[in-house]
Image (cartoon, rainbow, N blue to C red; front, side, top):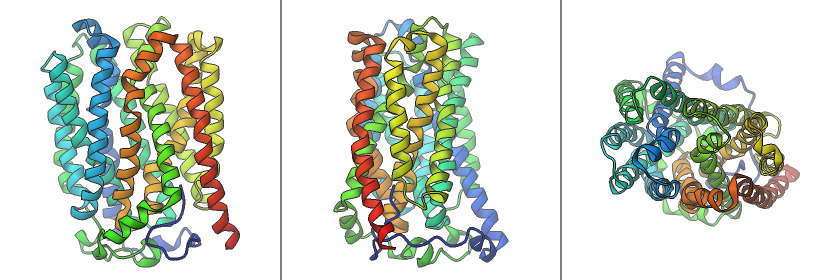
Length: 441
């Protein structure tokens, strides 16, 4: 959410070059491979979600079929999210050392394998072990994507590029939920919602092996130069770079934002279907309607990414403050009488998706590349995502289940509203810090 890379000496953000200059100096071959890599990353991360959001989608059905409580199923989400966080910490640094392509492909294969295994078992211990292994391997997907993107795109374009790539997890969630709804409505049972996505993901992993390229150098093209992306790739991830990343005050404000926004996102991804079921929807309708949250998130992600690039000139703070204020209002409304009306509640869920996913998508995408540069983009993304998932896992899993059980859905949403209000503090601090380089320029 800042334009300052840890490898820069001057804290002021460089002025972006004219948008057309890069396209004019790149060879057609470079552009073809970059497009192929971009769309492989996008579709590949959709495939990741086919083997991740399927659990969120059919969790109420698993509970009914196996007699498992929301708290029990919430523990699967919480424990597996901790393993996902652990993977973010390790895989982020690993991606900057061995390359993001390797981790991205390994994550696809792991997602397919463990999704299929989950559908074969029916006990809590097996569920926790299998889904934790799934999430640990999947942790390499996002950091791998960020690392590869940092090799192919100059810093002045990453806000928009990462905004579009960030649509992959919202699109994946939509596809996973609607695919699950089709499977359930067809009478195939919840277990097929794990088998079928596994096959699709495995097929795409085979395609990605040929179409995903780690960097321009992998296809014989020159790398981005220092004016576009900081030091060349050969400089690698160094201890000095990591030290500067970890001692950067605004980076830690961004980490605090990651904790709160990841918790809010997990709460809605995991429990929207259950909430809609409580309002009277049947299973198929609730599964389909729950996709409104990620669908609205697509619009919010695009809006925040391109606004931060082209309106606020790389400063991610101002639009985040605006969207977080609107998110807080929407959550308070959802926790009031309006949240009990099915139609109004669905609209408010969409508003939450738009206002939450915009700032969330900036954190470990454009924000990570802003701070990490070409050397440490994946490390920054892994740290930001890892911290976010580590401390928000309880809220997204057993925490939200406990709140809804003890306080009702209205009380749970009011708690989330106060959490959203608190996120305005680090967002405002980041915005204030970003104004200083702008004033200096």
